Length: 238
Figure (cartoon, rainbow, N blue to C red):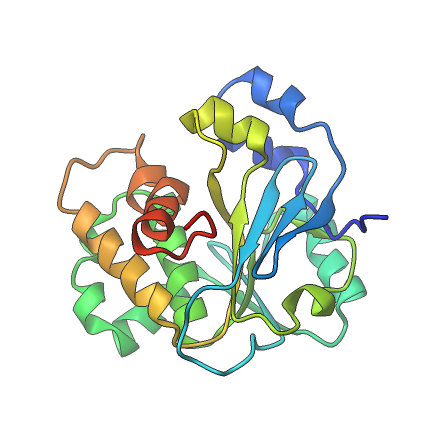
């Protein structure tokens, strides 16, 4: 029997293009082992691809959950989802980052990248970048505020160093006409993994091209992340 682990509520579906995507995702959330180093979590709205990357750190994923919001006061409608993480994972340390703290982390420890932050005009792009730096610097679990935890995370994290989200195959087919499409709404990582060096370098490279409010997914989001995984061999398809 495949256990339910996470559920992303209907609010996440607003990020997807088209009403058809919502129908394509009407399934439960399960975990299926695909290969020794890969798994697939199937969500009502998102699936989460879990692939251990070839990292050189032997550190485990820290048992801390990071979430981000503009301020320290998330919208009331999201509080139930936040609470689900405490209920299902009471041992996890919890850190809610506001925008000022996230940008402060980058400015203090990664000034070489902070100098480029003005190039990113949308809150979505900055939120993506902040989550990558948090995982690179501290490690832990990242989840969007509208993700709900249905089961403890420890069985999923055990023995892993980097876990990356993936959309359901139906979404991938409709969005990018491919069998796989990365989702960065749920991520987990040990600290200081080389994978994030590659990701952040790719973000900076892409920021030098054409940028608009319509293309954050290809600059800082899922399309960029998927491209890095496929191009560098982090993807399990290689």
